[in-house]
Length: 238
Image (cartoon, rainbow, N blue to C red; front, top):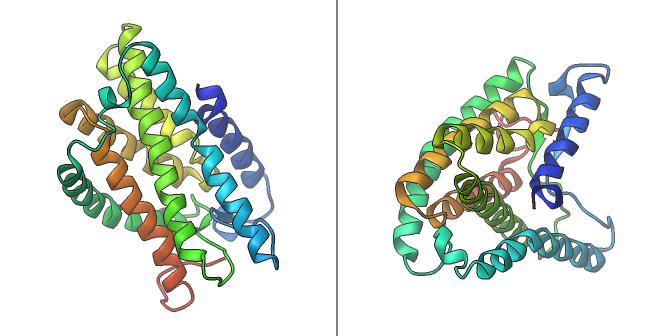
């Protein structure tokens, strides 16, 4: 499962990071772009590529659902269902509010110290589908990461007899690994987020609130950057 999804992304991020640290100049002078145009100057083709990328990125989640159904359960056993939508959203919003504010401060500090690339959350053209695609991208990221890296990974590690502490370390390091392309700050910040999310999953037994929190965080980053880039002094741009 991980070799088909976020485990492979971790290896890719490591290679990207090695390329960045061996590039002349500091990390903060380089950029990591998250949502870029796939067909510049051709908006309809670009839209097709964007939707294709979002859809195919969710295939591992479909595989998780299939494997769980073979066990006689399903995604509901991970707490990814519609049984508690308002509770999940409320908890997620509270988590996002705490992590979002501290996350921005941490990113700015790490970049200022030269430990992080300049993260460009979006570089899409000014077309009618820009904001819907950014929101869908945020939702895709959150579903993929929380279902695979929290719910499914912890279930499998528990079945293998791993201790809760070892599972927490494994899940958190994995989350940090596929953000390493952003720099040391991206790795450490997301590893800490992984610790918090694993703890909350153990406490609540549901990935639903984590999906909500992650979606809100990414929407804030993607849409917020689109609205504020170049208009405020504190937000770094490439």
